[in-house]
Length: 211
Image (cartoon, rainbow, N blue to C red; front, side, top):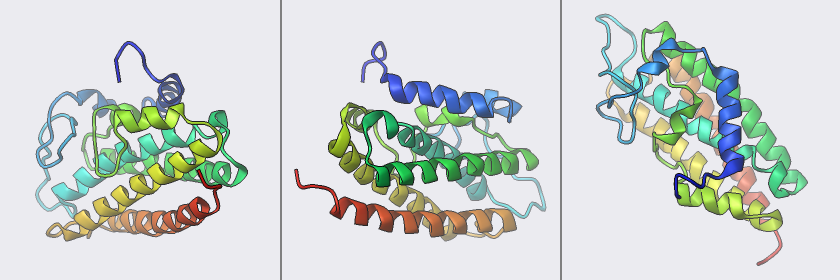
């Protein structure tokens, strides 16, 4: 995707969502380096875990990465109305968006409370976490209308959600990670809600007209 020809709909929505959350983290301005252990992330200085902390580096990386992951999902959901999504897809996209905005705030607040860098919602532009859409996939989604949009949205959001589930699995597979209470509760909530939504999306896909 050429820089001089941005996809207007998701670029505008990303700006809109970012403006809602602006000011949440003064640390977010430090996002100019590379965080070890997280491919595709540029979250500033190396993560330092204080002595005696109940959380791990993997917990911090998970929260930082999931902010970007959620932010891109919100951008996708805001395409639905403008692209003629059917009522069921529209209802689902609204639910996903409405649930993930407050979850971003929860993650940002956790990071700040623990003295860590809290990315803002623009971070999806430079962080490529598991399952996130490529620029080409976003362009494909933005170019589709009606039933074609419904099919592309459901297919790509299943991919996106599956990536989030992989992130949760990777978190709990990391030594001592996912044990801090807030991280554990949040990660399990992501697993439960997004597993359920994948089931709904697969069912909706079977209900779409054939190509």
